[in-house]
Length: 315
Image: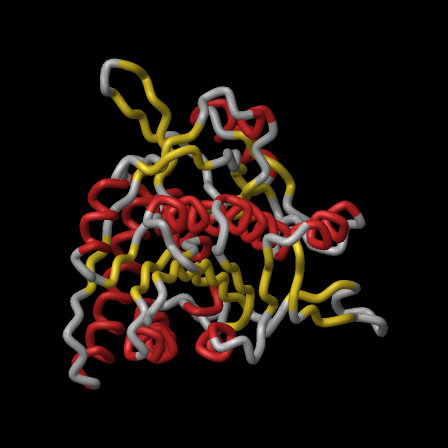
């Protein structure tokens, strides 16, 4: 019997070459990405997809920042644009692959708002760089005129930074669940979702922030009562002492072991750390749930237990 699986797609699944960010090249990459996803659909699994959007939303922001005589586009709207743009590519590519294999499935993208706490401590320390590089003088002007927080980025110039709050709930949860129960392939919470805060009286306000897509995928997985959360990345499995002579690939990882390795600093904050944390949260949320971290092309083998790192609830 097939499983209900939430897949978190990393940036390499959308743009194989970070230096080529054209829409044409992205679509070619996504057409290849669709094949291992449809392999899982063909085996009878229900698939829900969450994807990143870092390069794409940055590109959209940069276009508006550099354009003359065009009003600047607010960051939440840029996030919504990226959700639609990437969702379209995934819909087209997965749909094409489904039709080639004569599978009776349809694909739907949900523009997704994710509620965050307005008092989240992340708002006190914005860290996520977005958009173009500027000189220090230009950066000071943007801080003064636009209220941006600007930081120097590794000697390359100054960039806007935004906070990365924790996702609390998904506003379109009922829509997502209804589509999943109707057996659609659902694409949701793209880029971690559009962060919104509750202003009261039914009013939501989009805010300039970035939600980690792996944490959003974990939340989606709980909402749809998934059996498995698969986080797909550029490596086949999780490593400790990564890229060191004594690196060790992990086939399995208990919650206790994962917490120990986190404490020892084995997982990079902007890379493997949120992936492992998301997996811990998911498997801890309900008995019998499984989480896997592996590469896109080996997702099917990961489900079969042949590769990847399987995160278990055992403490």
